[in-house]
Length: 263
Ligand code: KIV
Image (cartoon, rainbow, N blue to C red; front, side):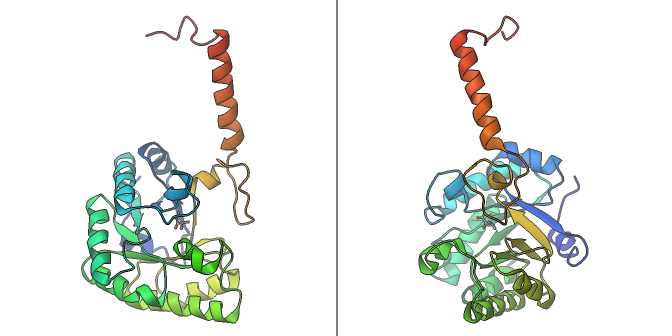
């Protein structure tokens, strides 16, 4: 796979849909690169899918940096985005710049921040000092306590207008890409036509410039997680459980190792 750069990604807007997945380790990064996925996101979703926590709030900058290094080693070619975790940019622009620098030194090529108008000054500052920023509006999981749950956003007029204003503010501030999570398809389509940055949707309908999914969700790692926006491309929950049960049985019955499974 040819090295993916930000200008090449931005050039795809309105022409060539962008495929992004989250990724947390070198093994899956290698497979994503082999599949031709052009953009990888080390999402703070790692708090939920890797650490097993109930939200993304407990993730630290050091944890994201650790996963960025692993993903970068596994896949040098895709454009690599690192999430700025909760608490790493909310206090001030200076705090955000310091932590973004840490993630760029770990191997990221851009950082992602959640929020609209409130984070526009940070987006502007990071862009000015050479750090591309991916914006994220709609359902922003770091604000789950404000929203009262992981529900669709932008349904009321107030939310709709706030999200639209936020996306436009991020675009004006120089955002490289903008993630639109769990917003009505018509709002995502409108934002996509009004901003110059490519939009990447998750639960935002088909009219964005690209799509992102959490890797473990699209691979079907959790049979009980079935939101309507998700398409599962595998059923790893069933397949991995069956493989591990078979291994357990073969060890117990002495069928593994066979004579040929020796060093
Ligand atoms: O953390 C994450 O995985 C994300 C994506 C769902 C966009 O922010």
